[in-house]
Amino acid sequence: MLTVGLTGSSGSGKGYVSDIMKSVGIPCLDTDKVCRDVYMKGNECYDDLVHNFGEDILGDDGEIDRKKLFNLTFTDKDKYEQLNSIAFYHIMRQKKKWIDE
Image 1 (cartoon, rainbow, N blue to C red):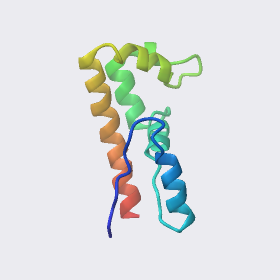
Image 2: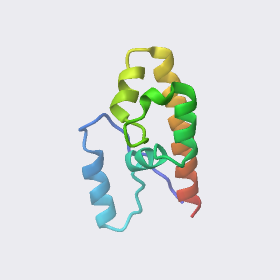
Image 3: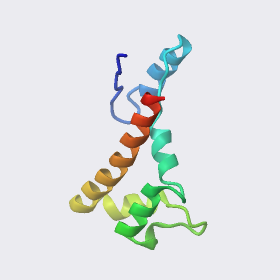
């Protein structure tokens, strides 16, 4: 099976292209959605992020507040790399599981 990664910056048309691919029957995994899902309470990624960045990244509902996490990590190169390392690990695990299925 050929696997293709569709990459690009925000607003570059990835969603548009993936919609076209889906419309002709090509299975597509939305890794932005996967990221949102793995950040949810009850997932290992959630636990890893809270362990590494503290409960200050949580909103009133106990879920990760993406804006708080962004504000904490965006201006600190080490924290930003740590965030990417954690998130990418869990996203790639989900991607592999999706492909295997």
